[in-house]
Length: 353
Image (cartoon, rainbow, N blue to C red; front, side, top):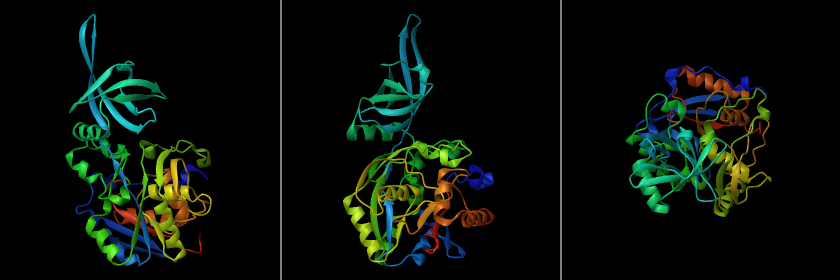
């Protein structure tokens, strides 16, 4: 299985830099049986039925991009350096792993001031990352971060424009609850409360799980033989309640439909034994063609980067030939791609699985 199997040519103009407004007006490609249908997200209920269960990732994106100043007094007097920080993940010792640019401008024990009363000391360095110990914690940390930080837009958007105040709203789901992600579960960005209420009224049920999406989700695959790729790890939790709900839906003949690849990876991690159970920890599950899905019946997801692990995941669900057909259609019909782009509902042929 070669990396080139998951490549395609994408016109630059199809990369979305802002989301559709309102959220549910985004386009929705529905692939079901032999058909591909063009719709919009607000039409989602046409393909769902009472007893289906949507699995939602309720992680909350933190404003993980910070710009600060390191001050130092030496024989030459006071000198300052501008330091750009991207928070990656909290560590067990209370520090945050982060990318510092330039890292060489900060010594161990030195402090970077970010404004809004927020500062951090460089506590350690490992694998090219700095470990920062902030002066605030809990609600005070979140409040200061909300003022001082910017949303961590994906590289392909950040290269086109800087994050701004609108992204604090746009790059967060309406059901975000547990802080810790540095990237959004982007398929979920298409939902507003009105759509959730409409689906609930028709008998669709919901389960919430938490997977803190890390910056590693954007890491490119650098090996030609994809089976030798090492996945990044992300922290997640499937509660006993969510596991019970998903099990009950399967037993009743309903479909379990994760919204986004993050929710899918998490529930399949929790179901590695064949049946889903409560689970918590770091998952580095790698899903590629040949994978056996234990709980996933369909998937709502955005359109993914060429040669990415997420292309491999959706290929595993739909089959490589079918996925090539889906992506060719999306490009021909000018669907908008990636995090702020349009969405798809992928319902595999049950005979395939």
